[in-house]
Image 1: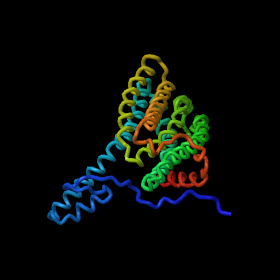
Image 2: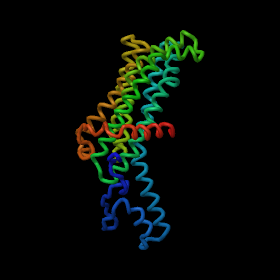
Image 3: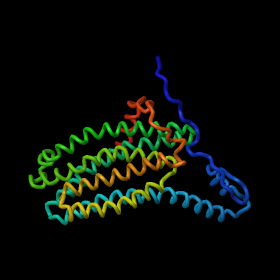
Image 4: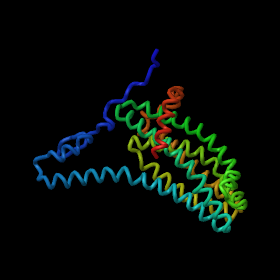
Length: 290
């Protein structure tokens, strides 16, 4: 007996779209080939046009993604800076929580979520658009499950830090900060699959715009929590978690309402619970490579 497997995705990774060149319509997937083989132009001009076209294409896709990751870093750094204004102990605690505990969860979730990018890219190129939503849901299920043991680590971070030789005062303060980051773990679990789902469709600008707006709210809310409300380290961490959830919810609303995702997101499906073991293997392999 052989279990029924999903059909292999062997078609091209990129969807064909028609773009006019010198009055002719050429598929984007063949555009570079057309530019280089156009004998009506000198070879130097062909090389220049090819470099220019490919550079524009890369920048159009890469620049918003770079902005997103920069803002992710800025939000964590801003939280650490605001915490530093509370005192040296709070600065040390926030630094330890950010670089020692939180970065581990970030790297693990980002790595496991990267499996979606590979599978969604294949499904999108093969025009199996409904599978993108299935892969998104599968990854979210697995990452949410992974968040549970990570939450346990966060809860017991104080004895872990003491075991690693940190002074008790710093370990205690860092634990308070890390407790406020527990909701952020589950935001990671939802965010990274969504980002990879969108990137596989070359939808990158919305995430950048959402992140830009969110970081402004993050700075304002952190200032209010630390300076006006007196919430201290825990408040700064809670605001960071809240900011991540704002990003997640905004991206999800975009997917639900945008016409660009109407074929790739068709709603929740029980099929997302099928094939989880094989998906887990791919996710773990992606995390290890990252």
